[in-house]
Amino acid sequence: MSVRSRWQVTVVPSGSGTIYSWNTSRKEGLIYVSIFLLVMIIVFRGLVYIGRSNYDLIKLNNLHKENQKLLAEMTEFSHQMDILLLRIKVMEYWEDHQRETRDLKSVSSALRNLGFGGEPYTDLTFFPFQQEIHDIFNENLNKLLFLSAKVNLTYNTHYDLLEAIRLRELQLNGTPSIWPTFGKITSNFGLRHHPIYHYNHFHGALDIANEAGTPVYATAEGVVAFADYQVTWGNIVRINHTLNYQTRYAHLEKIIIKKGNFVHKGQIIGYMGRTGNTTGPHLHYEIYDLASKTYRNPNSYVDLSDEQIVANQYLKNK
Image (cartoon, rainbow, N blue to C red; front, side):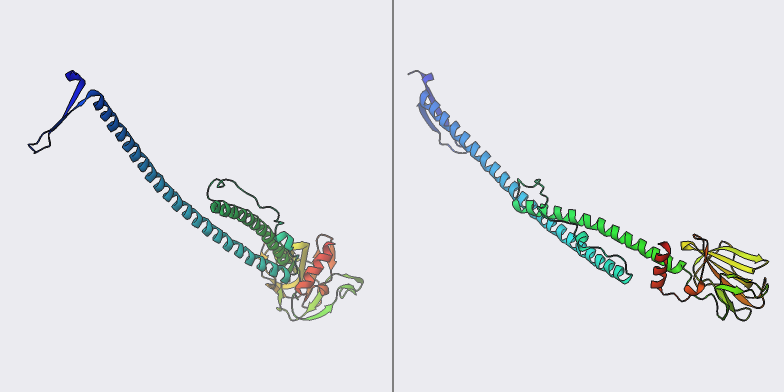
C-alpha cells in the first residue's frame, strides 16, 4: 500500500511532551471524517432547532402576555361603557320626570330600547385567534353600537324637551297674566257709556283707578313698541310680547322706559296719571291680539295659572 493510501494523524497537546499519533487507511479516514461531519451537522441542526424553539417559546409567551393585556383592556372598556349606559339611564329618568312634571309627551319604552334584538352583529377580525378575545371583542362591539344609538336618541329627546320647555317659558313669560296695577275697576271690558262724550261704544280694555303715581307693571315680558304722548291716550306705552300679544297702558303720569327696551313681567314701566282724555287718574289697560287683530278681555288673563296659560295658548292656536 502506498503512503498516499494511508493517513497519519498526530496530536501534540499544548504544554505536554507526549505525542499521540496513529495511522489509518484513506478509506477509513474518509469514513471517520464523514461521521465527524455528519455529527457536526446533526449537532448544528439540533442547536438551530433548540434556538428556534426557545425563540418561538419566548414569542408565544409574549403573545400570551399581549393577549392577557388585550383582554384586560377590553374588559375595562366594557366596564366604562357600562358606566356610560348607566349615566344615560339616569339622564332618561331625569327627562321622564321633567316631562311628567310639565305634562309633556313621554318617550315610549320601545323607543328607549331602540328595537335591539335578534342575532348580534359578529366581526371575524379575531376569529382565528383566542376564542375569548373574539367573544369579548364582539360583545364590546355590539355594546358600542347600542351606546352610540342611545347617545343619539338621548341627545334628540333632550333637545326636544329643551325646545318644549323653551316654548313653555315663552308662553308663561310672554302671556299677560298679572294685574298691571292696584286699584278699583271703574270701567270693564265691553259695551259702555263713554264718560266724556256720552255715547255707547265698545271699550276694549279695563280702567283701573287709583291715586296718581301708583306704579304700573308690565304684565308680560316683551319689547317696548311705543312709549310717548298721544292726544287721546296721553302718555301711553305699548309692549309687544311673544305669541303675538300687545299690551297697552294709557293715561300715565310718567313713563320710565323707552322704545326698544326689553321689559320683564312685573317690571315697573311707569306711574298712573290723568294725561290725555280722562276724568281722573286711572290706567287704561288693553290686551290686543296682533295676529287676529282683536281685543282680548283682560279679565280672562289676570291671575292665570301656568296650566291655564298653556291651555289658553293651545285653544288660541286651534
